[in-house]
Image (cartoon, rainbow, N blue to C red):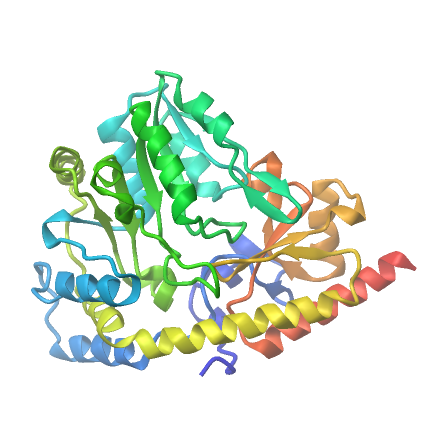
Length: 389
């Protein structure tokens, strides 16, 4: 199921597109953009084919069974009982973040982020004229931790009114514990900082690091949060799905819905609806197999790095992204990118794009076949050997 290489260049897939890999990037190991090289569950393909066969694609309402399928999925997988009245639709998670910014903050106000963190957080804030407030994560003995004293100090500024939380965290792969999330929630609540939690990777977690929905921290903390979800990552349907915000606070929900309506982004896509519904209803076994494949790919990287002393990675608790540590090479970030691109023939994500805190690191996407991953690791090993000689 996950051992067939599919040519993604026959469609304008970003991961292999010249705008990402460069005009000379056809031969590079394309492992940057955070999607998978796999087809979604067969049930999703069948549902989309059936909808296509119907042949009429006029305006559609939300299918009556879509919200129940989402509710059942999160109840069964994560013991989270979502109320259908708490669900707000949006085109994608980043759109939800932008709507939240415009509904609940003013230009010039500060929004807390935790670098190194998803680069689109910065773009969203800058493009909406909000101020980035950094609560830098601390790398301690190979594991990133939250600096809660610094977080409290940042949140105490009355001109800081929102926090963008990432759980599981992209790019470092941390799945924040219930205790971590509760401390975040309590600090933000005490200082009137609204939490907007990006939980798009929630289904992709590994042993001993279960995902805790922010909504399960108690009603008081949940009522100070907007929780962003989408099946995009879980089932590799990013280009044909939409997103959901879960908002238990009625006042916050109505304001978010009003912003959604103001921007007229509350339309429905027929293929997105059937793809998501089929994924939630029938995608569980496929996802379970996928997680095994990811864990085996992680083991492969670990084994190969035993012979590559100049590189290591932060042990992931979730996501299909590995945070690679190249600091032993003692290269400037521009030189590191050049080395990987030109010598190793890799096209992965520059760690510096996650903030200066990511310099010395690179983000590797392991959502590919084992043979493709092994071939990429061969190129890296050869490049490192050549450099050492």
